[in-house]
Image 1 (cartoon, rainbow, N blue to C red):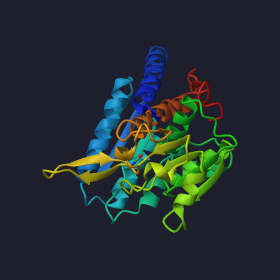
Image 2: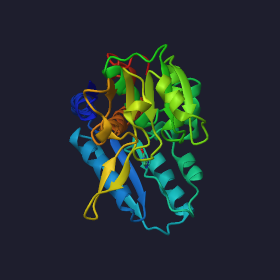
Image 3: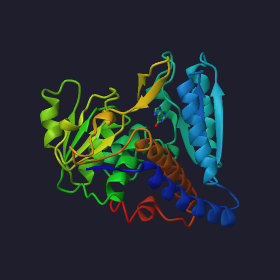
Image 4: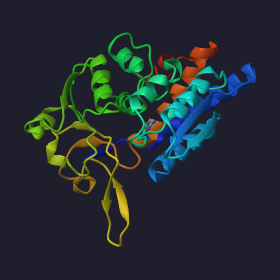
Length: 306
Ligand code: GUN
C-alpha cells in the first residue's frame, strides 16, 4: 500500500497555530512580526516563490514586503540595503531569494544578513550552529522534512536515513539535522557508487537531487519512508510542462509496493513555506522577548528535539 504524506494538511495545521499566536502578540505588543524579502532580476520562478511566501505570511497575519532590484544591481547597493534592514527594528526576518545573478557574490550577500534575522537559515553562523549548539535558524526545507517525519509518527532515532543530494540549502543541513535526531545517516551524491544499494537499505530516504524521476519504487525497501524534495519539470504533450519530484509517482502501484511518501506537488513544498513563517515568528520572539512559545515548544508534540 502507498501511504501519501499530506504536506498541505500539516502546513495548514502549523499556520493555524501561528495565526493565533500572531494575533495575540499583535494585541499585546502593537506590532506584527515582519518578513522582508529581496528579489533581484525578473526570473519568473523567483517571483512566483516570493509571491507565495508573502501570501502565506499575510494569511497568518505577518507583515511582509518585497523589495525588487534590477538584474544589474551592484553588490554594494544590495549589501547597503541589507544593512538597513538589519538595523530596522520592524524587520524580523530577511530573505534574499536565490539564485542571484552571476555578478553577485551570494556568500558575501548572505553573510551580511544579521544571523538573528536569518529566517532562511543560510548564514554560515546558522549552518555552524546546526552542528554545534543548535541556537541558530534551521533551513526551512530540511526543518519541514523533519517535521513531516515526526508528524507521521516516525522517530528518526536509531533508523537508517539516506540523504541523496548535498546542496547547501537542503541535503547537507538535512543530513546534519537527522544526525542530531540520532538517525544513522548516509549522505549520497553524484559520485556515490551503486546509489540504489544505499537507498534500498534505508528506513528513511530523503530525495533531494532535483533530477526528475531519478527514483522508482523498487529503489526503496518495503515499508520505507520517502521524502521527495524534488521540484523538477517534465514536458507534457502540447508544449506545457508539469511539476514532478525525484520519484516517479506514476510508477507507484498501490497493490505492489509498501511505502510512505510525500507527493509532488503537495508534500514538502507547503512545509518549506510553513517553516519560513515559523522561523519568522521565532525571530520576532527572540528579538523582542515576546511571551510566545519557542519553536521547540510550538512543535514539541511532533518535534521533540528542535
Ligand atoms: N531559492 C530556492 N529555494 C529557496 C529558499 O528556500 N530560500 C531562498 N531565499 N531562495 C530559494
